[in-house]
Image 1: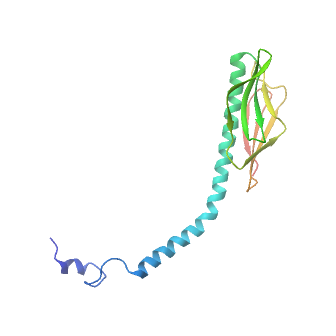
Image 2: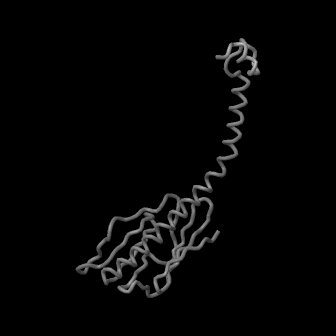
Image 3: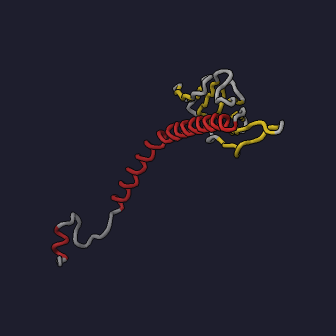
Amino acid sequence: MFSQNTLNTYSRRWPHERGASLLDALIVVTVMGIVVVLAVPLIGPALELQRLDSASAKVVSKLSEARLAAIGRNASVWLHIDSTASTLQLQTISGGSTVNIGPAEPLPSRISIGGSPAQVTFNSLGRLTSAQTIILTGASSRKTETVSVSVQGNITVSNMN
């Protein structure tokens, strides 16, 4: 198709040169190094925000599950919050003893959980006796998200950044 001379006229190299030079490789490696150095500091906070959003979504999901279970069972159901183990566990009373509903759900790593309740209890109507607030905090950025549950059982999430 093309002769060797035709191909060489489209190339910036001499006919006897082949491949990339050492200078080309060094330039590429240097540019990649600069991009990595600039990108790494941005990844950490982004990952922590993602973990914080994931944790608040999990808390909201488990609270909703507890409310629906209380209404469905026509009995009190609560979300037990273990801040030491960073787990969430639905529980109820059956036959006079506490029974776990499903497995305990772990929160994402490097997220601490606080606020006043060790548990949020929904009655058989899906309501609380008093409003509750759960505060989730990222370990390094100190960004927080607050999950609030009203007496009527409405769940809201707000950022406190």
